Image (cartoon, rainbow, N blue to C red; front, side):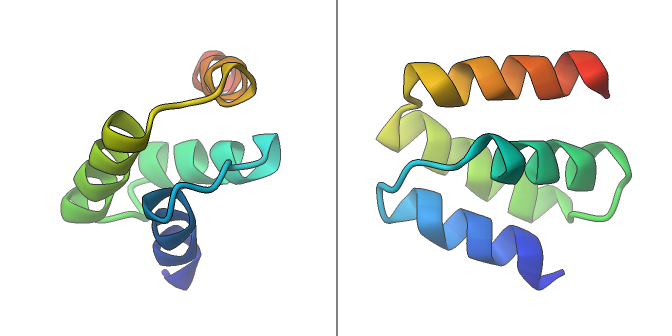
Length: 66
């Protein structure tokens, strides 16, 4: 479970997530591995800190592939 927490900390700190990290987040979300509160916290960090164009593209591709 530490995977999503590491991703959350990275995004919360204002850092850019790689396409692989975004795919990991989507995978943890759709498989039910991540808790609802963790998903909500990640989405809030993405909203507050924004997404780069690359992150938006990676998120969209990962959601389509899920």
